[in-house]
Image (cartoon, rainbow over all chains, first blue to last red; front, side, top):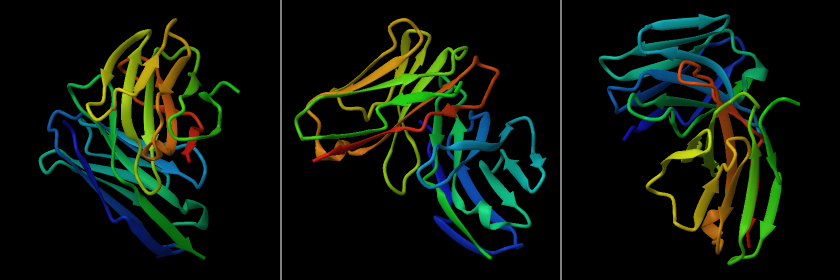
Length: 113
Length: 114
């Protein structure tokens, strides 16, 4: 089955800097890759996603890139703000699954003012 | 509130007791998922329903765990003979059909087994 690895587990940046979180996946048939943000004590919420027929997607300060050949995808946050501080999870949906998402272990991002 | 709702939000129980959690998905969503999340980890898939049919179940899921979605609307997750290792946040999520990717999560039910 699908396996998702996420790095780093913790990331600390200064306000205004960029943050990059990387994930790799194992199932070459996976076709959907979302990123979720989870604030302390709250539910995970989708912030951006990308499908396997697209190499890059951007939404304001957030972008995701996908390299299908290498089976990795990354989240890029520019001009970070203190409210970006949270745990970020990447996930992958296998091509043969029923839509089940397999999540990485998360990256705790801290943005220092 | 038209989001995914879960009940109870917190449950403390003694080892060996049975517990049941309920999830009400977004009304037009036919796909419903249960995940488990422990501290410092990502959500771990438990089981999946399409309408009332349970189509996928994690191989890691103990037979003490059972889930139902009898009318294709709300779902229940029961844990029998709870163990301390069952302590976790149990998250329910739902989404629409195959072409809609976003999974909407509930706030979760936190289980503490003493």
